[in-house]
Length: 141
Image (cartoon, rainbow, N blue to C red):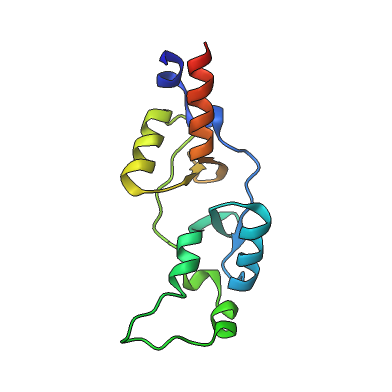
């Protein structure tokens, strides 16, 4: 367990991160969620990460209440990621201890977090699965 206490996001993150552009349609995003089985994508504008979009963000646009009329399904699927993404997002850097990453995930009910370096460049993503892998590896030693 001591190994887990010293482990960092940079050691367990996924380095090849799939991202989406702000102008990705909800239809395209839906296909990506199904094909990749991811729960979140960083949203890029050029080299900058300008937000994140999750399955929850996707589903929120289909939620309605009696005070709001629901647009046609095709209209909703034509909306852009920029309309539903979370522009203010939590991220970690590669040196962040996994104990801190885990606490952020629990406190904010998040399944994954982008990993940005000191220059705010996307260098990875860390998920609950990565944390579980680190715990399992730590328990073996």
